[in-house]
Amino acid sequence: MQTIDLLDDGLDGGRVMAWMLFPDDAVMRQAHLAREVVEQMLSSGEVEGSLVTVPVWMLRALADGEGKRTAKAAAGEATKQGTVAGDLLALVYEMHVKGLPEPSFGKAIEQYKKFAVGKKYGNGDALKYSEQTLRTYFDAFEPVSHLWAAFRLNMGPYAYTADPRDVFHKPESLFQFLGVARDVGEFATTFVPKRTKPPRPVLDVANMVSVPTNIPALRVIPE
Image (cartoon, rainbow, N blue to C red; front, side):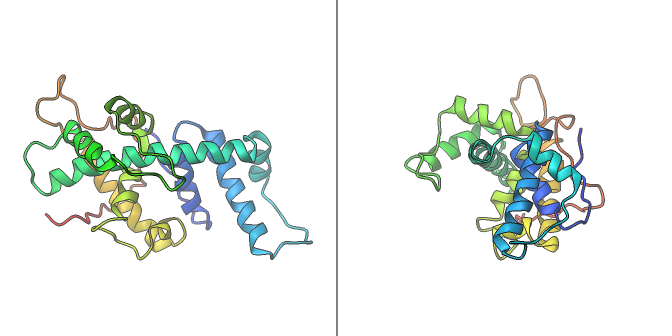
C-alpha cells in the first residue's frame, strides 16, 4: 500500500491530482505535476523574459515524461475512466450510508448504466455503459477510486466546497476532500457485500493508495 505524501509546499493539490490520473506510473505523475506547475507559471505572465529557478526534480520530470500532447491525451482518458470508478464506488458508499438493502457493486453498475444512457463527457464523447467496460475502468483505477469518489460526491447534493476544483487549489478544501476520501476508503476496504463469491471487500486495502494518517475521516452523506 502506498501513501500520498503531502509536503505543504503549495503543490499538494497537484500532487493528489497526479495520483488520481496516474496511480500506476510514477514517471507520469512527476511529469504531470511538473508540467502543471510550469504552465501555471507561464500563464501568469510573471516570468516572461525573466530567469527563473526551477527544481532539479521538475527538470528531470519534464525530460523523462511524455510529450505535452501525449500527456494531455493520457490525462483526458484517465479522467474519463477515473470518473467512472469514482461514480461506481460513490454509489455503493451512498447505499451503505443510507442503509439501503444489500449495497453491491452490481447494483451500482445498474444504476450507472441507467444514468449514462444519452449522456456525454465534456468533449462530446458518449459515456460508456457496457458492464464489461465499466468493470475494466474500475479495475484500472481501483487504487484511487476512493479519491475519485470523494471528488464526484462534491459535485452533487453532498457538495462540501463552493467549487469542486477548490480541492486542488485551496489547502482547507484539499483537507476536506482527503477526509471524505479516507471515509470512503475505510468503508470500501472493510465492507463485504452479501452474495459476493468468494467473500471480499469492495476494495483491496493492499492496493489502495492511502490518505495520510493525520487526516481524519469526513462523512458528507446524512445517515
